[in-house]
Structure formats: structure tokens, C-alpha cells
Image 1 (cartoon, helix red, strand yellow):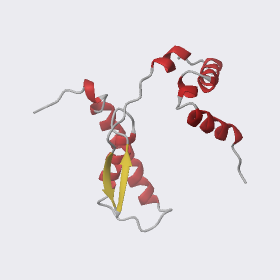
Image 2 (tube, one colour):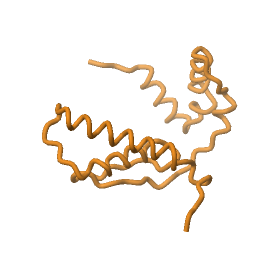
Image 3 (cartoon, rainbow, N blue to C red):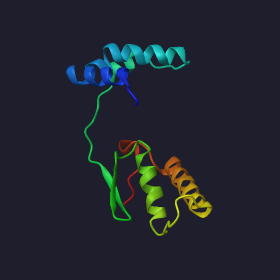
Length: 128
């Protein structure tokens, strides 16, 4: 049995404070402390200044499933791009060398395209 008491406490704090604990309170303090301990560079003001945006998710249909992700500028689109590459293949065996190879190559291609073409939508050059 796995228990995650700190995780549960964090989720409770986020819920009780409408996420303020994450951006300004106890959780923010813990994040900054861990970041500094690990050589990170962000500070509590970085978290406090963050303004979350509600976005419409994006999806692909893959072998009978709709797979949803947050749109760019995160890496969720890379997962969707890889699934689009892979949806033309049938994977009959889970532990198959060819299946692994195709999946690795699809992920590599998706990340390469993501690195070259994907950015914050407000920074993207819109081509008409």
C-alpha cells in the first residue's frame, strides 16, 4: 500500500486556499527551498507573479481513443504529434523490438518538430 501524506496535504492546501498556498504560501515556500537546495533559480516572487490562463485543450483520435493535452507552449502537443505519427501502425505485441523502435522514432521526430516549430502561441508567426 502506498500513502502520500505530503501530497494529500498539498492538495488540501491548494483546495482550501484556492491555489494561493501554491503561489504565495506554504507550498511556494517549500518549492523555493527545494529549488535553492538543488541549485535552481526561481524565487517566491516568480510564483506570486504567475497568472494562470484557462485554455481549450487539444486532442487527437488514436486507435479508438481521444487523447487530450494542454495546448502549446507545453510538451503535450509533442505527445499528440507522436501519436499522429504512430496511428498508421498496428501494435500487436507490447514487448516487441519493432514496436519499441517505432515508438522511439516517433517521439524523437515529434520532439524535433516541437523544438523547431512550437512556442508560446502569442509568439508564433502566423502564416496565411
